[in-house]
Image 1 (cartoon, rainbow, N blue to C red):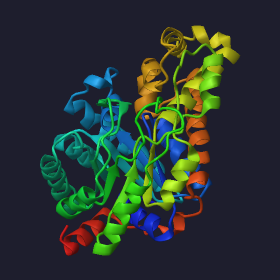
Image 2: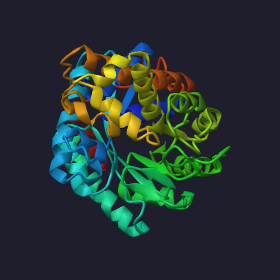
Image 3: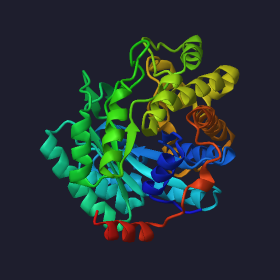
Image 4: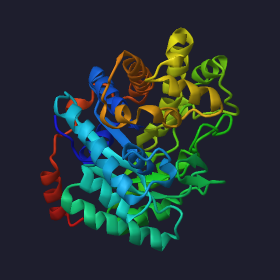
Amino acid sequence: MSLIPLRPLLEASMRYGFGQGAFNVNAAAQAKAAIEVHEMFRSPAILQGADLANGFMGGRTDFIHAALEDKKAGARNIAAVVKKHAENASVPVVLHLDHGRDFDSCVAAIEGGYTSVMIDGSSLPFDENVELTREVVKYAHPRGVSVEGELGVLAGVEDHVFAASSTYTNPLSAVEFFQKTGVDALAISYGTMHGASKGKNVKLRKEIPVAIRECMNHLGIFGALVSHGSSTVPKYIVDEINALGGELEDTHGIFIEELKAAVGCGINKINVDTDIRLAVTRNMKELFAARPQLRSSPSVGGIYELLETKKNQFDPRVFLTPIMDTVMYGTVKDEDRAAIVDCIERGVKEVAGILIVEFGSFGKAPLVEQVSQEEMAERYRKAGI
């Protein structure tokens, strides 16, 4: 199957009442593994490249400082890998930009081959957020690209996204936002947090999506709701990392039962990034513990050195910089690199496989309409959005 826009998948999620995980990928091997595990469970797939992940995939190892040109190159690299594997996949695949920080970042993603983009104007005053989001919609929809916005501020840290505290989304403002922007989906703040330290025993304010959904249904407005900062931060993986010399502290995720309940309250798309980072890092630590000869490998020994010197970190991008050609293009030059790629792929499949089942998207791939970007552009045109 070819890549599809986000809108048809969201329509299926709303019609058939399942939650759809959206998994961030930062390497070619992650994209391959994510598509394969969705095929295994006959689930539609949303692969996400964050704004700065594009910079990393463009070769910028200090991706926090990625420039627009880095993001353009990275968007092309991610899209090329995803398209390659999606073409032969048996399930529909969406490539979505996560946390586009400005209009130019969204354009770069669209031109690079993304079929859906998120513009994050949540830090702006309401009217400015509406204006920015509407501009992205006006650019994206005529190209058959779906758009997600954000209203309300999530606490926590993820790439360039940082906030010390949360501002819950006002349901009435959310409805107004959909009306004024024409977005397909809206990320809301209802108790989730970015990063691996979300606080103990988080209870989601599920009355917020319930209120938004009731108002949207009453007014006959289409709009999917998105849960950002929704990683579960599995304790068993954190414990395994620390048993292997890691120094992760104060790590708490969102309980799976809370997220499953949120699906029943109107949440359609659930973003997960941290869980995959943890699983991949755990796997690499296990590899070097089991095969100590790899620690001095000319090919991957540099990864071991970074794992040992940055014990309080868990983002694989910090550790994979010695093999950027493998990260960016999926090239595997030797058996040592193949072992690292295996760590990456198994980590993605472990996390995504569990959540595909828990969120309920398994077996739902045939329910998603195969819509090309050209067809989607025409639908947007006819709907006037």
